[in-house]
Structure formats: structure tokens, C-alpha cells
Amino acid sequence: MMDNLIVRNWMTADPVTVTPKTTLPDAHDLMKRRRIRRLPVMEGDKLVGIVTLGDVREASPSDATTLSIYEMNYLLSRLTVEKIMSKNVLTITPTTPIREAAGMMLLHKVSGLPVMENDRLVGIITESDIFRVVVKNL
Image (cartoon, rainbow, N blue to C red; front, side):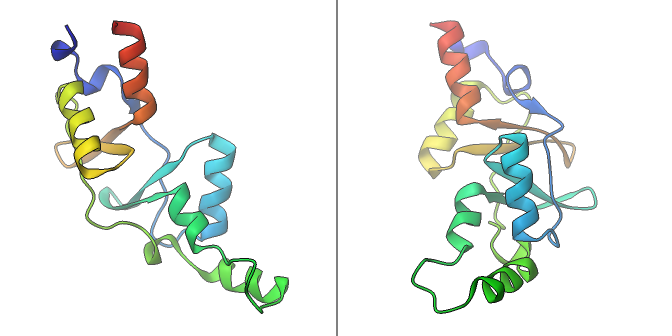
């Protein structure tokens, strides 16, 4: 029964995106406000990377730093998404079966996949979407 389910019916269309020049604080703020955990990185119409909440948190300074809060904020405000984004982004198409999308996420240990159609970003599918499929179809 789950084999006939495709990504298009479960993905988030027109996902929130950032550019490579977006600063880390801006990306983090956007994720918190929109309650999302990953942002496709776009240069014009081209998908050039993806950045996750985990990437942003890892790039933040630890409590062990000797920098002052002002120095940290200054340095963070200058750090851009392009410095920490994953560049080799796995993608899928809207017609990919959900089972295949879930299998790719498991195999590659990723929690979301940008959905591309004719070299255009049309959506994103995440673990949460896969869970929705399971809950609604079992």
C-alpha cells in the first residue's frame, strides 16, 4: 500500500531558503521563527547546499572559549552559511516513491531531502513528513 505514495503528496512545497551569504545568526533566527531544522541554500535558482540547525549549533562557540561575548557576537555575525553548509546535497524528485525517499534518508543518515524538478527546487521532504505517511497509512 505504501509503494504507490510519492514525495509530491507529502513534501513541503516552496521551502524556506537562504543564500550562501546569509549570516549564521540570521539563519538560526529564521529556523527558530519558522520552526524548521534545515534550509536549502540557493544561489539564484541553483541549489548549492543545505544547512541544518545542527550545523549552526556546532558552529557556535563553546562555553570554553576565552573570547568575550562582544568578540563572539562580532565573529558570529561575520560567519556565513557558505562556510558551514553541506555542498554535496542529495536530492530527489516529486515522483520518487516515499519508500525510496525514506530508504535514502536511512542509508545516507540525513533527515531531509530537497525535492528538485527540472533543476528547480520545488520542495523538501523530511523525517517528519515520512512519519506522517506512516501514521496516516498504517
